[in-house]
Image (cartoon, rainbow, N blue to C red):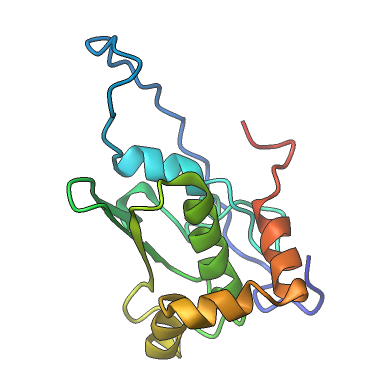
Length: 160
């Protein structure tokens, strides 16, 4: 975790109970199953905050409602809300969400990561940075950033 915390005392919320999928109508193991909002949220809900030992779900940086999916158009948008409007870790959070989805979804998906409107002082610059392929590729060549992202994505023993 990072020293010199931006938000020393964040509000921590209860995790939502994981819902179990029970679609027993499709027994064909080779059929393509649509990807939905809940599946995307399950992929990203346990990403850890770069500053605190809590998940992005526990800090309400991400909620199930912050995920939009159009499976037919292979499009996913995740809108996250930093805990403070001058959060210097917003880029790492957005990059962590992008990397997790890039690793989890088929490559046909277009992933759009956004900061919630009005939730960050440099919202437009962040949105541009998080969705520019060349900037993302350059960030993922930086070993320090990759280490921070990997730390955010590493499972913790509290994840259930």
